[in-house]
Image (cartoon, rainbow, N blue to C red; front, side, top):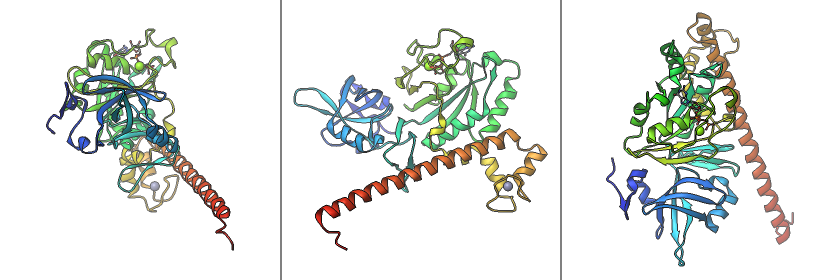
Amino acid sequence: MSSPVSTGSFDLSLLGWDESLAAGLPEHTTPARVARVDRGAAEVIAADGPHHVQYNARVRRAAAEDPVALPCVGDWAALRLLPEGRLELDGVLPRRTAFVRGGVSRDSRGGLSGDGQGQVLAANVDVVFVAEPSMHSTDFADLGRIERLVALAWESGGTPVVLVTKADLFDQGLSELLADVAAAVPGVDVHAVAAERGDGVAVARGYLSGARTAVVLGPSGAGKSTLVNAMAGGELMETQQVRAGDGRGRHTTVHRELIVLPGGGLIIDTPGIRRVGLYDISDGVDLVFSDIEALAEQCRFADCGHGGEPGCAVMAAVETGDLPERRLASWYKLQREAAWMASRADARLRQEQTRKWKIIHKEMRRTGRNRT
Ligand SMILES: Nc1nc2c(ncn2[C@@H]2O[C@H](COP(=O)(O)OP(=O)(O)OP(=O)(O)O)[C@@H](O)[C@H]2O)c(=O)[nH]1
Ligand SMILES: [Mg+2]
Ligand SMILES: [Zn+2]
């Protein structure tokens, strides 16, 4: 662990600040963690407390070029003090992890590069809590949704942890449910949580020791804000007042918000996620379906699509019942989605290239260098 880096009255290490972040801070700027963003401005927490800061022209220019440059919740921002005594947001420090929606990929150095269309939804998240209700209205836990969100979590660079929420509604058969969930996400911790009566809250907090940052993802009504409040020990986030039934599909939380927990650690509450399909999750899918990947190595053909080819080890495992058919169907679906996202990103890249060449050709004609 790094030694605390103290600036002013507030110990920034409690917000996750450390020496390697400090090394990336531009001269004559002050660090602050972004707690929430609104159009053109952010709520940040600096060493001397919270501030509401506007983005300066540099940030706005960079964001016009590529929205990935826009500050997002969890970012470390560099603040600049203006002569009149006002602070402005001058840029964001390189992100360690990021949830990126739409048309963005990792470059060869593992950094994030945009094609001008991406949007970062949360940054510098160490732990991704995937909240899935054990039971919601008449539905039971949705394994497909868990697989999808865990893939998204791996893709972000954070570590997923699945929390089966509202466990009190499912006392009967809870251990079978947890076993089914664990089988769907090999290598990922799975815990039952009943936040209203306090079960599992300490376990969740345990993941945040050392001032780590978590985000809670999951459908609306999963009990994300209830869990955040239980972890914070107070009513910080508004929760859905009416229980299940008529409350379905209504979003109680509408902003992504970073909360500093009194006992240490930080947590980002989010509105219920609906369209995970807009993320690039190709690498994440491979990690979630490591069992299928392992079976695929036994298939006769290296490029087997597991759709009825001879000597397919994956289909064989489905026939013997070793691999649930649901899981193969889920894998197909997410593979298709990942392929679609990748093709969309390629198409954008081509479009961008064409646009650039058009500008270059126009410029060449204008300057008369195109006399062939
Ligand atoms: N039985 C039971 N109900 C719970 C539990 N946790 C939350 N709830 C209820 O579930 C409903 C939804 O909880 P919220 O915390 O608002 O859900 P959310 O995931 O934040 O929803 P959005 O903000 O809309 O995304 C509320 O009525 C809670 O009282 C629990 O552990 N057990
Ligand atoms: Mg909420
Ligand atoms: Zn196969």
